Amino acid sequence: MQAAPYAPQEGSKYEYEFSLFLPKDFPIVNTRLVLAQWKQYCQGGEKAPCSDDSPVIAVRYVAGELYVTLNTDSGAKKLYRLTDEIRNKWLDFKFLIRFSRQNDGQIAAFLNDKEIIDFKGVTSYSESHGYASKSRYYFKMGLYRDIMAKPMTIYIDEFRMREILN
Image 1 (tube, rainbow, N blue to C red):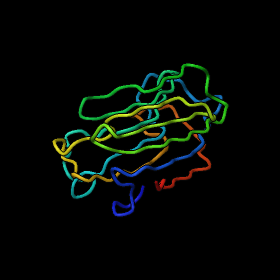
Image 2 (tube, helix red, strand yellow):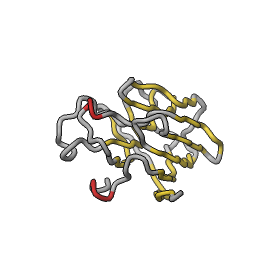
Image 3 (spheres, rainbow, N blue to C red):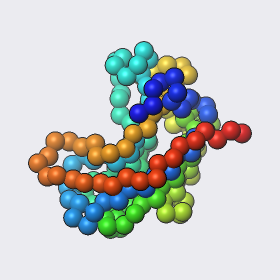
Image 4 (cartoon, one colour):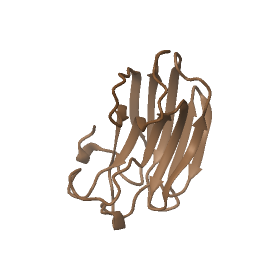
């Protein structure tokens, strides 16, 4: 996780690339599982009270469905869903993101070089939810899930992030 002063800033455009591999025996369960996520820093740091601390953008895998969500003041929506078998294959993701609480926000996403998302609009929580007027965002990936007894293993490779200067 990036320290707030170095984290991506609202209004700028960033590119993220990473690869995920779920082994063939990865359990298919009907419980919350986030594989990668972009979160918005709360005012005064992560511990400040924000009315919604859900990831703004998340790559999720639940009950055999891979999907990407966007959470903003207007609620959560799925931007992409895939029900094909994804286990035992490398998944190469590329995201181009401009976080904004205005309609100039952007999410373009590619999975294995195929465009899966082309979204333009609000991509950030507003100040009314406790977030700073010029917010910063951080990225993290791993297995973020509800408590369960079943073990899970994921492989992560080739992470890259860069600011796109216009």
